[in-house]
Image (tube, rainbow, N blue to C red; front, side):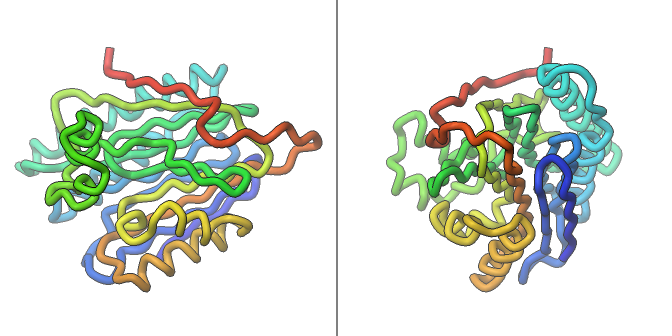
Amino acid sequence: MSGMADLRPMRAFALSDKGRVRAENEDNFLSKPHMGLFAVADGMGGHAAGATASAVVVDSLSRVAPQGAAAELRRQCEAALQGAHRDIQRQAALRGVGTMGSTVVMLLTFDRYYACLWAGDSRAYLLRGGDIVQITIDHTEAEQLLADGVLTPEEARNWPRRNVITRAVGAGETLALDFVNGELFEGDMFVLCSDGLTGHLSAAEIAGRASGRAPEEACRALIDLALARGGTDNVTVLVAAYRQQEEEPTRLRPGREESRETTRPR
C-alpha cells in the first residue's frame, strides 16, 4: 500500500492498494494540493500494459504548470491528457498490445471553484453538508444503455457487461473528456476513486466512512472496507478537503451550481 499527504491549500491524502486478488497494481494517482490538482488513473491491458498506461497519464498531468487563470489550467490539463492518449497508442503499437489504456478522473481547484475532467469509470464524489453526490458519470455500456432508456436502473446494475468502459485514455481514435464545474464551499470533501472501491461500496457507505474524518483517516477507512469485502480489484482512493476560510458562505446541496460539457480534441 502506498500513500501521500500534503497539507497546503487543500488538505489531501491518497492511498493505493493492489487488493486481495490481482498480482499487480495498475492504478496510479497524482496529488498536488499546492496546485489544486488531483487525479486517479486505472490502467487496463494486462502484462504490465495497464500499469504503464496509468503511469503515462499521471506523468503527463504532473508536468502541468500552474499559469494564468482557471481556463488556462483546464486547457493545459486537457492538452496533457490528449498527449497521454497519443503516447499510450504509440506504446501499444510498439508492444504489439491490442488493448492498452487508462481511465482518468481529475479534480482541479482554483480560488473558490472546482472542475472535474474524466474518461472511463473512475469516479469523483462530492460530500457537502451530510449529502454525497457522484459528480461524474461512468463511461460504460450499462450507463449508456441506461441513459438511452434501454435498461432500467436495476437492470443496469446487473447488466453482464456493466464494467465494459466506452472511453479511456489511449483507447479509440480520439479522446473525449467530460467536464463538470461548480463553486467550492466550506467543508466540501471530494473522493476520487478507481472502480476497485465502488465495486464494493455504495455511495452511502463512502459517505459514512469519509464524513467527519481527516483525508488520511477517510482514505484508510474506505480502502480497509473494500479489502475486507474481498478486494477483488486494485483500489485507489484520493480524498481532498476544502480548508476552513475566515468567512463561511451559505451551504448549497451538491450539484445545484454545476455545469457540464464534453470536450473533444480540436
